[in-house]
Image 1: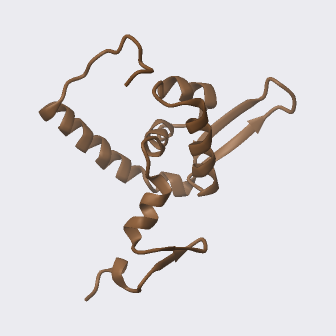
Image 2: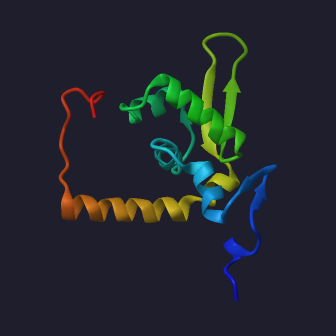
Length: 130
């Protein structure tokens, strides 16, 4: 029996063609920051400013762009409170985003294992220079 990822020549999701199901998943969460953003939202909603503080190595542009992509792909919800400045913007995981939690837990476990076996935790004097 063939694995599900190989049942056709392509997988079509949201009018995009992918060579396999791994490609679908990586399109949604791939890159340096998306999984980290999802990790920081897994325990509950956060304001933009809180996410910014928790991700000191990310630029404002990248944070905004990838939050927008995660929202467009249905992984996170962006809620705006208030009509005139200062407005409050809160991000949270959708049900679809929460379905990624077991994968986040596995990535976290693997990362912890790598850090324990091959790395060390250090404190950066200037966290912007990773």
